[in-house]
Length: 362
Image (cartoon, rainbow, N blue to C red; front, side, top):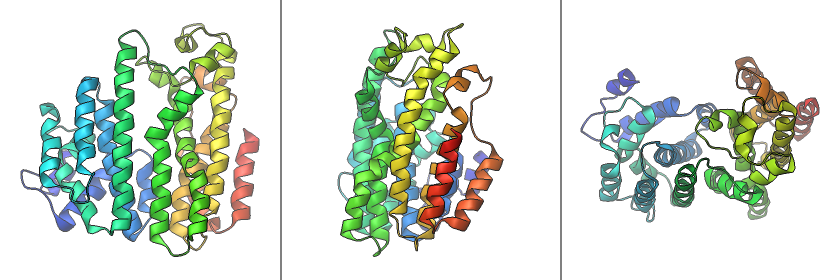
Protein backbone atom coordinates (compact mmCIF):
# COMPACT_ATOMS: atom_id res chain seq x y z
CA UNK A 1 0.00 0.00 0.00
CA UNK A 2 2.84 2.42 0.93
CA UNK A 3 4.59 1.73 -2.40
CA UNK A 4 1.45 2.64 -4.32
CA UNK A 5 0.98 5.90 -2.42
CA UNK A 6 4.67 6.76 -2.62
CA UNK A 7 4.45 6.45 -6.40
CA UNK A 8 1.78 9.15 -6.29
CA UNK A 9 4.11 11.47 -4.36
CA UNK A 10 1.66 11.84 -1.49
CA UNK A 11 3.49 13.85 1.12
CA UNK A 12 3.18 17.22 2.76
CA UNK A 13 1.89 18.90 -0.38
CA UNK A 14 -1.72 18.39 -1.35
CA UNK A 15 -2.39 16.60 -4.63
CA UNK A 16 -4.50 18.40 -7.19
CA UNK A 17 -5.96 17.75 -10.64
CA UNK A 18 -5.03 14.48 -12.32
CA UNK A 19 -2.80 13.39 -9.44
CA UNK A 20 -5.66 13.83 -6.98
CA UNK A 21 -8.05 11.84 -9.17
CA UNK A 22 -5.42 9.10 -9.51
CA UNK A 23 -5.12 8.95 -5.73
CA UNK A 24 -8.92 8.69 -5.45
CA UNK A 25 -9.08 5.87 -8.00
CA UNK A 26 -6.17 3.97 -6.42
CA UNK A 27 -7.28 4.33 -2.81
CA UNK A 28 -10.71 2.97 -3.78
CA UNK A 29 -9.06 -0.35 -4.59
CA UNK A 30 -7.55 -0.45 -1.11
CA UNK A 31 -10.58 0.53 0.97
CA UNK A 32 -13.42 -1.23 -0.84
CA UNK A 33 -14.01 -4.96 -0.56
CA UNK A 34 -17.03 -5.07 -2.84
CA UNK A 35 -17.94 -1.77 -4.46
CA UNK A 36 -14.73 -1.06 -6.36
CA UNK A 37 -15.85 -3.52 -9.05
CA UNK A 38 -19.20 -1.96 -9.84
CA UNK A 39 -17.99 1.65 -9.41
CA UNK A 40 -15.38 0.91 -12.06
CA UNK A 41 -18.04 -0.05 -14.60
CA UNK A 42 -19.38 3.53 -14.60
CA UNK A 43 -18.04 6.37 -16.72
CA UNK A 44 -17.94 10.15 -16.74
CA UNK A 45 -19.63 12.35 -14.14
CA UNK A 46 -21.66 9.48 -12.73
CA UNK A 47 -18.50 7.45 -12.11
CA UNK A 48 -16.75 10.37 -10.46
CA UNK A 49 -19.65 11.41 -8.26
CA UNK A 50 -20.28 7.88 -6.97
CA UNK A 51 -16.54 7.28 -6.49
CA UNK A 52 -16.26 10.43 -4.39
CA UNK A 53 -19.44 9.72 -2.45
CA UNK A 54 -18.12 6.25 -1.59
CA UNK A 55 -14.80 7.68 -0.38
CA UNK A 56 -16.51 10.31 1.77
CA UNK A 57 -18.80 7.74 3.35
CA UNK A 58 -15.80 5.47 3.90
CA UNK A 59 -14.14 8.34 5.79
CA UNK A 60 -17.21 8.71 8.01
CA UNK A 61 -17.40 4.94 8.50
CA UNK A 62 -13.72 4.74 9.48
CA UNK A 63 -14.29 7.31 12.22
CA UNK A 64 -17.45 5.56 13.43
CA UNK A 65 -15.77 2.12 13.45
CA UNK A 66 -12.60 3.12 15.31
CA UNK A 67 -12.35 0.96 18.46
CA UNK A 68 -10.14 3.39 20.36
CA UNK A 69 -11.99 6.66 19.88
CA UNK A 70 -14.60 7.59 22.48
CA UNK A 71 -18.14 8.00 21.18
CA UNK A 72 -18.27 11.65 22.24
CA UNK A 73 -15.11 12.25 20.21
CA UNK A 74 -16.60 10.40 17.23
CA UNK A 75 -19.64 12.65 17.53
CA UNK A 76 -17.41 15.74 17.44
CA UNK A 77 -15.22 14.53 14.57
CA UNK A 78 -18.18 13.39 12.45
CA UNK A 79 -19.85 16.77 13.03
CA UNK A 80 -16.69 18.49 11.77
CA UNK A 81 -16.69 16.32 8.65
CA UNK A 82 -20.38 16.97 8.00
CA UNK A 83 -19.77 20.70 8.40
CA UNK A 84 -17.41 20.60 5.39
CA UNK A 85 -20.37 19.73 3.16
CA UNK A 86 -22.98 22.17 4.48
CA UNK A 87 -22.21 24.64 1.72
CA UNK A 88 -20.97 24.07 -1.80
CA UNK A 89 -17.73 25.82 -0.98
CA UNK A 90 -16.06 22.79 0.64
CA UNK A 91 -13.83 25.22 2.48
CA UNK A 92 -10.17 24.26 2.89
CA UNK A 93 -10.06 25.50 6.48
CA UNK A 94 -12.98 23.27 7.45
CA UNK A 95 -11.30 20.26 5.85
CA UNK A 96 -8.08 21.03 7.72
CA UNK A 97 -9.99 21.41 10.99
CA UNK A 98 -11.48 17.95 10.47
CA UNK A 99 -8.09 16.40 9.64
CA UNK A 100 -6.51 18.07 12.68
CA UNK A 101 -9.17 16.47 14.89
CA UNK A 102 -8.22 12.94 13.77
CA UNK A 103 -6.03 10.83 16.10
CA UNK A 104 -2.34 11.61 15.74
CA UNK A 105 -1.62 7.92 15.07
CA UNK A 106 -3.64 8.08 11.85
CA UNK A 107 -1.08 10.38 10.26
CA UNK A 108 1.40 8.15 8.47
CA UNK A 109 -0.69 5.03 9.15
CA UNK A 110 -0.37 2.08 6.77
CA UNK A 111 -4.12 1.49 7.09
CA UNK A 112 -5.52 2.78 3.77
CA UNK A 113 -8.79 3.80 5.46
CA UNK A 114 -6.97 6.05 7.90
CA UNK A 115 -4.73 7.37 5.14
CA UNK A 116 -7.85 8.33 3.19
CA UNK A 117 -9.18 10.26 6.18
CA UNK A 118 -5.90 12.14 6.56
CA UNK A 119 -5.90 12.89 2.81
CA UNK A 120 -9.37 14.48 2.92
CA UNK A 121 -7.86 17.65 1.50
CA UNK A 122 -6.98 15.64 -1.60
CA UNK A 123 -10.36 14.00 -2.27
CA UNK A 124 -12.96 16.44 -0.91
CA UNK A 125 -12.18 19.38 -3.24
CA UNK A 126 -12.60 17.11 -6.27
CA UNK A 127 -16.36 17.33 -5.80
CA UNK A 128 -16.25 20.98 -6.90
CA UNK A 129 -15.28 19.86 -10.41
CA UNK A 130 -18.74 18.31 -10.88
CA UNK A 131 -21.98 20.12 -11.76
CA UNK A 132 -24.20 21.27 -8.88
CA UNK A 133 -26.84 18.62 -9.55
CA UNK A 134 -24.17 15.99 -8.81
CA UNK A 135 -22.60 17.86 -5.91
CA UNK A 136 -25.71 18.52 -3.84
CA UNK A 137 -26.93 14.90 -3.45
CA UNK A 138 -23.43 13.85 -2.38
CA UNK A 139 -23.24 16.63 0.20
CA UNK A 140 -26.69 15.77 1.54
CA UNK A 141 -25.93 12.07 2.01
CA UNK A 142 -22.64 12.75 3.81
CA UNK A 143 -24.33 15.14 6.24
CA UNK A 144 -27.20 12.74 6.95
CA UNK A 145 -24.99 9.69 7.34
CA UNK A 146 -22.58 11.46 9.70
CA UNK A 147 -25.50 12.39 11.95
CA UNK A 148 -26.89 8.87 11.96
CA UNK A 149 -23.50 7.25 12.58
CA UNK A 150 -22.78 9.57 15.50
CA UNK A 151 -26.13 8.72 17.04
CA UNK A 152 -25.50 4.98 16.89
CA UNK A 153 -21.87 5.33 18.03
CA UNK A 154 -23.10 6.96 21.25
CA UNK A 155 -25.71 4.25 21.74
CA UNK A 156 -23.24 1.47 21.02
CA UNK A 157 -20.67 2.73 23.51
CA UNK A 158 -23.28 3.05 26.25
CA UNK A 159 -24.60 -0.45 25.53
CA UNK A 160 -21.16 -2.09 25.38
CA UNK A 161 -20.26 -0.64 28.75
CA UNK A 162 -23.10 -2.78 30.13
CA UNK A 163 -22.30 -5.88 28.09
CA UNK A 164 -23.59 -6.11 24.51
CA UNK A 165 -24.81 -3.72 21.84
CA UNK A 166 -28.12 -5.01 20.51
CA UNK A 167 -31.25 -3.67 18.85
CA UNK A 168 -34.58 -3.98 20.63
CA UNK A 169 -36.84 -4.41 17.61
CA UNK A 170 -37.11 -4.39 13.84
CA UNK A 171 -37.82 -0.66 13.87
CA UNK A 172 -34.40 0.01 15.38
CA UNK A 173 -32.82 -2.32 12.82
CA UNK A 174 -34.50 -0.41 9.99
CA UNK A 175 -33.30 2.90 11.43
CA UNK A 176 -29.72 1.66 11.69
CA UNK A 177 -29.78 0.20 8.17
CA UNK A 178 -31.28 3.40 6.80
CA UNK A 179 -28.44 5.54 8.11
CA UNK A 180 -25.63 3.25 6.98
CA UNK A 181 -27.09 2.09 3.65
CA UNK A 182 -30.65 3.14 2.88
CA UNK A 183 -29.73 6.76 2.28
CA UNK A 184 -27.24 5.59 -0.33
CA UNK A 185 -30.23 4.43 -2.39
CA UNK A 186 -31.64 7.96 -2.21
CA UNK A 187 -28.30 9.31 -3.41
CA UNK A 188 -28.23 6.91 -6.37
CA UNK A 189 -31.66 8.00 -7.57
CA UNK A 190 -30.56 11.65 -7.62
CA UNK A 191 -27.30 10.87 -9.42
CA UNK A 192 -28.87 8.46 -11.92
CA UNK A 193 -31.48 11.11 -12.75
CA UNK A 194 -28.82 13.81 -13.12
CA UNK A 195 -26.89 11.60 -15.50
CA UNK A 196 -29.52 11.04 -18.18
CA UNK A 197 -32.50 12.72 -19.80
CA UNK A 198 -34.12 9.28 -20.15
CA UNK A 199 -35.24 9.35 -16.52
CA UNK A 200 -38.30 11.60 -16.41
CA UNK A 201 -39.68 13.25 -13.29
CA UNK A 202 -42.35 10.55 -13.18
CA UNK A 203 -39.79 7.76 -13.41
CA UNK A 204 -37.62 9.42 -10.77
CA UNK A 205 -40.64 9.45 -8.47
CA UNK A 206 -41.09 5.71 -9.05
CA UNK A 207 -37.41 5.09 -8.33
CA UNK A 208 -37.73 7.10 -5.11
CA UNK A 209 -40.37 4.69 -3.82
CA UNK A 210 -37.87 1.82 -3.98
CA UNK A 211 -34.43 3.36 -3.54
CA UNK A 212 -34.11 2.95 0.23
CA UNK A 213 -34.75 -0.79 -0.22
CA UNK A 214 -31.80 -0.93 -2.61
CA UNK A 215 -29.43 0.02 0.20
CA UNK A 216 -31.27 -1.98 2.85
CA UNK A 217 -31.12 -5.15 0.77
CA UNK A 218 -27.34 -5.14 0.69
CA UNK A 219 -27.01 -4.12 4.33
CA UNK A 220 -29.34 -6.80 5.72
CA UNK A 221 -27.52 -9.46 3.70
CA UNK A 222 -24.24 -8.27 5.23
CA UNK A 223 -25.75 -8.42 8.73
CA UNK A 224 -26.81 -12.02 8.11
CA UNK A 225 -23.40 -13.01 6.70
CA UNK A 226 -21.40 -11.24 9.40
CA UNK A 227 -23.45 -11.94 12.53
CA UNK A 228 -21.04 -14.53 13.97
CA UNK A 229 -18.05 -12.28 13.28
CA UNK A 230 -19.86 -9.29 14.87
CA UNK A 231 -20.55 -11.35 17.97
CA UNK A 232 -16.82 -11.49 18.60
CA UNK A 233 -16.95 -7.80 19.51
CA UNK A 234 -20.20 -8.21 21.49
CA UNK A 235 -22.35 -6.64 18.79
CA UNK A 236 -25.52 -8.17 17.36
CA UNK A 237 -27.86 -6.51 14.87
CA UNK A 238 -30.46 -9.29 15.06
CA UNK A 239 -33.31 -7.63 17.00
CA UNK A 240 -34.06 -8.89 20.48
CA UNK A 241 -37.77 -9.23 19.67
CA UNK A 242 -36.96 -11.83 16.99
CA UNK A 243 -34.65 -13.75 19.31
CA UNK A 244 -37.30 -13.86 22.05
CA UNK A 245 -39.88 -15.23 19.62
CA UNK A 246 -37.65 -18.28 19.27
CA UNK A 247 -36.90 -18.82 22.94
CA UNK A 248 -33.69 -16.82 23.39
CA UNK A 249 -33.66 -14.39 26.30
CA UNK A 250 -30.84 -12.33 24.74
CA UNK A 251 -29.19 -12.27 21.29
CA UNK A 252 -25.84 -13.28 22.82
CA UNK A 253 -27.31 -16.74 23.45
CA UNK A 254 -27.27 -17.39 19.69
CA UNK A 255 -23.48 -17.57 19.82
CA UNK A 256 -23.04 -19.53 23.03
CA UNK A 257 -21.25 -22.88 22.93
CA UNK A 258 -23.81 -25.64 22.54
CA UNK A 259 -26.59 -23.39 21.25
CA UNK A 260 -29.22 -25.26 19.21
CA UNK A 261 -28.25 -24.56 15.58
CA UNK A 262 -31.78 -25.22 14.32
CA UNK A 263 -33.25 -22.66 16.71
CA UNK A 264 -30.50 -20.18 15.83
CA UNK A 265 -31.24 -20.72 12.15
CA UNK A 266 -34.93 -20.07 12.75
CA UNK A 267 -34.02 -16.67 14.25
CA UNK A 268 -31.78 -15.78 11.33
CA UNK A 269 -34.35 -16.96 8.77
CA UNK A 270 -36.56 -14.00 9.72
CA UNK A 271 -33.78 -11.63 8.64
CA UNK A 272 -33.19 -13.72 5.52
CA UNK A 273 -36.86 -13.25 4.57
CA UNK A 274 -36.53 -9.53 5.23
CA UNK A 275 -33.48 -9.37 2.98
CA UNK A 276 -35.34 -11.16 0.15
CA UNK A 277 -38.19 -8.65 0.45
CA UNK A 278 -35.76 -5.74 0.04
CA UNK A 279 -34.01 -7.52 -2.84
CA UNK A 280 -37.36 -7.87 -4.62
CA UNK A 281 -37.75 -4.09 -4.41
CA UNK A 282 -34.14 -3.51 -5.46
CA UNK A 283 -34.57 -5.63 -8.59
CA UNK A 284 -37.72 -3.66 -9.44
CA UNK A 285 -35.71 -0.48 -8.87
CA UNK A 286 -33.01 -1.61 -11.29
CA UNK A 287 -35.54 -2.39 -14.01
CA UNK A 288 -36.78 1.22 -13.81
CA UNK A 289 -33.38 2.35 -15.07
CA UNK A 290 -33.71 2.73 -18.87
CA UNK A 291 -32.02 -0.28 -20.48
CA UNK A 292 -30.08 2.05 -22.76
CA UNK A 293 -28.02 2.85 -19.63
CA UNK A 294 -26.02 -0.38 -19.70
CA UNK A 295 -23.35 0.65 -17.21
CA UNK A 296 -25.84 2.01 -14.69
CA UNK A 297 -27.83 -1.20 -14.79
CA UNK A 298 -24.70 -3.31 -14.34
CA UNK A 299 -23.66 -1.12 -11.40
CA UNK A 300 -26.91 -2.18 -9.72
CA UNK A 301 -27.19 -5.76 -10.94
CA UNK A 302 -23.78 -6.99 -9.84
CA UNK A 303 -24.12 -6.39 -6.07
CA UNK A 304 -27.80 -7.40 -6.07
CA UNK A 305 -27.19 -10.74 -7.77
CA UNK A 306 -24.20 -11.38 -5.52
CA UNK A 307 -26.38 -10.66 -2.48
CA UNK A 308 -29.07 -13.00 -3.81
CA UNK A 309 -26.55 -15.79 -4.38
CA UNK A 310 -25.24 -15.31 -0.84
CA UNK A 311 -28.77 -15.54 0.57
CA UNK A 312 -29.35 -18.69 -1.46
CA UNK A 313 -26.23 -20.25 0.09
CA UNK A 314 -27.31 -19.22 3.59
CA UNK A 315 -30.70 -20.86 3.08
CA UNK A 316 -32.55 -21.33 6.36
CA UNK A 317 -29.71 -19.77 8.34
CA UNK A 318 -28.44 -22.92 10.06
CA UNK A 319 -25.21 -23.01 8.01
CA UNK A 320 -24.16 -19.62 9.41
CA UNK A 321 -23.91 -21.24 12.86
CA UNK A 322 -22.53 -24.64 11.84
CA UNK A 323 -19.95 -23.82 9.15
CA UNK A 324 -16.30 -23.40 10.12
CA UNK A 325 -15.99 -20.60 7.57
CA UNK A 326 -18.12 -17.60 6.71
CA UNK A 327 -20.80 -18.61 4.20
CA UNK A 328 -20.20 -16.61 1.04
CA UNK A 329 -20.08 -17.03 -2.72
CA UNK A 330 -16.91 -17.96 -4.59
CA UNK A 331 -14.94 -15.87 -7.05
CA UNK A 332 -16.19 -18.14 -9.82
CA UNK A 333 -19.76 -17.21 -8.92
CA UNK A 334 -18.82 -13.52 -9.04
CA UNK A 335 -17.28 -13.99 -12.48
CA UNK A 336 -20.39 -15.80 -13.70
CA UNK A 337 -22.66 -13.01 -12.45
CA UNK A 338 -20.55 -10.37 -14.18
CA UNK A 339 -20.51 -12.34 -17.44
CA UNK A 340 -24.22 -13.22 -17.55
CA UNK A 341 -25.53 -9.79 -16.53
CA UNK A 342 -23.20 -8.12 -19.03
CA UNK A 343 -24.84 -10.18 -21.76
CA UNK A 344 -28.46 -9.72 -20.64
CA UNK A 345 -28.61 -6.40 -18.72
CA UNK A 346 -31.12 -4.94 -21.21
CA UNK A 347 -33.75 -7.65 -20.76
CA UNK A 348 -36.19 -7.21 -17.87
CA UNK A 349 -37.52 -10.69 -18.61
CA UNK A 350 -34.06 -12.24 -18.25
CA UNK A 351 -33.42 -10.31 -15.02
CA UNK A 352 -36.70 -11.56 -13.53
CA UNK A 353 -36.08 -15.16 -14.58
CA UNK A 354 -32.45 -15.25 -13.41
CA UNK A 355 -33.34 -13.68 -10.06
CA UNK A 356 -36.28 -16.07 -9.62
CA UNK A 357 -34.00 -19.07 -10.26
CA UNK A 358 -31.65 -17.96 -7.50
CA UNK A 359 -34.55 -17.38 -5.13
CA UNK A 360 -36.08 -20.77 -5.89
CA UNK A 361 -32.81 -22.44 -4.87
CA UNK A 362 -33.08 -20.73 -1.50
